[in-house]
Length: 124
Image 1 (cartoon, rainbow, N blue to C red):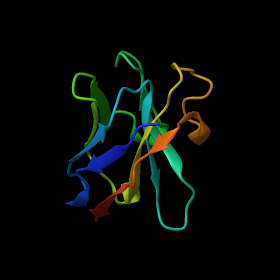
Image 2: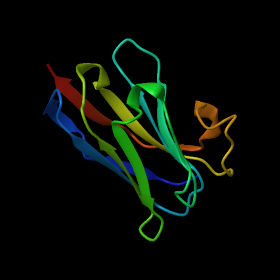
Image 3: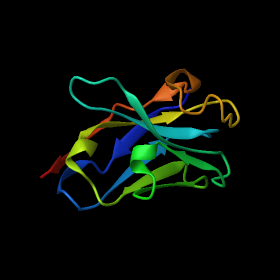
């Protein structure tokens, strides 16, 4: 397991943008973002392969969010554009130790390490 530290959350108006970052304490394979809104279950947002060439997004963020990584710095970033009030949630950075699997990538138990989360609030 690695330690993950998120940053970049905050308050933004609808239609605005935020960039979340996550720093890992060591090498990682797949990485992902999940989110959890008040009163709702944690849900998958996006994932990226080790080499950054494969990304996968939940339908509700496709075309708005961009997931990237810098392996030299052990960091990943989630650029969030055209934010909506329904994007309000705590966002969690995750890291998995297994290679990419399309069948498992959106499942929480695919990931071994989780960050503490960062709050994103989108006002209407």
